[in-house]
Structure formats: C-alpha cells, structure tokens
Image (cartoon, rainbow, N blue to C red; front, side):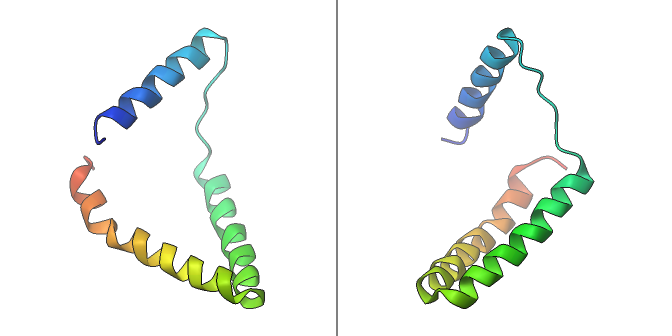
Length: 76
C-alpha cells in the first residue's frame, strides 16, 4: 500500500491534467484558515454530541500514533 496509493494518485492526476484540469496547491494561509475553522466546528460538535466526541477523540489518538512514522517515512 505504501507504493500503490501514491502511484494510483499520480495516475489520477495525469488523467485530470490530460482533461485540461489545472492542479494548484492551496496556499499556506488558506490551509491554516481551514484548520482553524475546522477545529472550531469539530469542538462545537463534540460539545453537543457525546458519540461524536468519543469518535473524534479516537480519531485524534489514531492520527497521533502515526506522527512518528510519518516523520521518518518522508524526506524533509
């Protein structure tokens, strides 16, 4: 899976570009705004829904467990 997924995504990008789609990265400022506002919404949902709060806590723990590997598996 470590090599299959990036290859599959690269093929998809080739198809999009061949169809005339222009691929542009999000600006760092816009990504930061997305993160900030997403955190606000997720916190509101967690405050109002115990099941959501539990699922979100579980997801955050899962993502945190992968941080060490991601930092070692990618070039700086």
